[in-house]
Image (cartoon, rainbow, N blue to C red; front, side, top):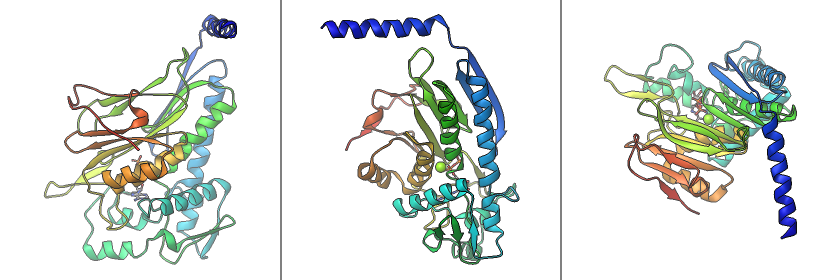
Length: 339
Ligand code: ADP
Ligand code: MG
């Protein structure tokens, strides 16, 4: 009992200490990796730390961008030899993407780029590709045909890679790490909707993250997190409408070459590592609800929120009590997945 009192007093002291020097709020906005990024950080080291975090993101963009001339990935796709040596970051990201491809049975596939190009998602002009063109593009894909040895990547002729599905997650993880390394204990980053929460809010309460409604303005729900990444893949993020009015989005099922159609409209992954979360958000979107649930039960280590057409929402048990649906979005309660 006495020890408990001592502990309580110590806690009060810490809280009083924090309250005395109300943490100052700093923010930073910029455009990188084809999207808007926002950082909010508290405390005396925030400004310098955010500057370093932005620099880290820009370095990663220079190395990982599929369109930036001279990037590691650009060099792979414009190679003259079969094997291309990669820098440390690219080697780590590609190595991770290949491992994730294996884990997810190819639902995530960093070699899907020829198909993404055939749909025009890399350009301003998108179109439904001819069946023969799509088949030809698919023939140039397949993560099992790629080798990464000692940081050197070997691809068969005609194949290309792209880290579009994991790059922002990697950047989020690295930027969060830069902030932590520089002593920031309270910050929240949004990298085009990929969230990286460092610590908690300055008053010690969790960060509140809004989950965008896939089919309306505003939010579908609110999530409380601390020291976590929150990454969403949604069919509403990038899409086009063909002459018949049909919508086609940018997350491709590598098994068919067509945008994944399985009733899911958004998949949000909550976990410790932004890179893992980004890979899983894309892969589980491709898998669909049943396979995503089976994957979660088999692997664990993360939580997820699935939204289906018709606004049915499913959450894993770790989020019960931390996620609330906005009543304006749906009156229906979330279905909770248990192990
Ligand atoms: P966003 O970039 O909108 O946050 P994702 O993380 O889900 O969304 O990544 C989607 C991007 O990844 C696509 O624009 C495309 O470049 C690429 N991509 C699409 N389907 C796949 C897939 N099955 N595996 C790997 N990359 C993919
Ligand atoms: Mg992703």
